Length: 386
Image (cartoon, rainbow, N blue to C red):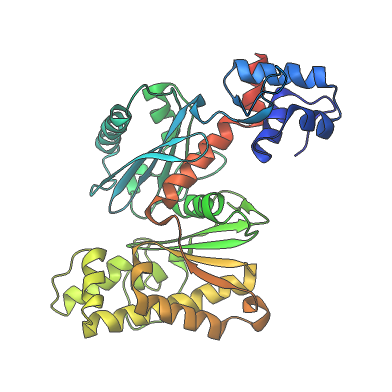
């Protein structure tokens, strides 16, 4: 952490976040400041509710174990998807307090979609039991590229009318709290990494669902790219006999040819009535020949494409998420193709795992993004020091 010569309250707070249950004396040792100066910083943070002091008092002294106060506030973390929506309430330590899922997706009607989403936020806040901590921020995951410099959606293939729309100011007007919006693949990687795989220094999270996406973690940090467009693997070209014209206009995109929606369309052309990925999972479980053929072909093509990423980025872990990751014949062929196509050095220590955070991955990533913003050195200092 880059810091000033004199440790500010915000910098002291970061040390507590990085070292849960740290003592005042240890903070003084690590910062090189006097116990009196450290106590002054800590008292400011305690007064503003950022910290809690716990432990057993000795000889009349106050407890000395310092931790982040999880009840300082709550955040709303939501995933507005292409097939469903998920809304979570999360505390300041990343614990999910409530979860609601709806079989309703974002539509091209921005006003109607946001009005509906606002109502779902209200429902989730009202469902919290007991006295509710104050709402401090909102994080939102969406299936579209987001320019990390402007917060605007750029060239979404699913939500055309949302192009160049900065959504955060619209949501900020609802509650008067900060709002951060990001791409779902990026947030899935962040949620998985921070919640379940913090020891992994480099990670690829593959979102395999109706649409495809990828989140990248390098050196323990999410990689968004120069403009926020990193991870758009759905538009990687693929050679396959199962072709479909993509919403972007090309006819060889991985997602359009072999994503969940494409597989379902191929099955319907063969006379099946399946309409959802859940129905696809059921067909595979029942050993339907058409479903097995298509899912195996998709797994092989995806694995060959991901092998290129593995050779390029050399990650420690590849995480398979999204509803297609539940289809074993698909993931088996994906693994086989990846290991067959990637270079020996790239896969010598590679782990390919199924997601641990599962359906909550993007919401957890959205939560951590807004929590990190609220708990940044600048935000804490602005609040504590005025």
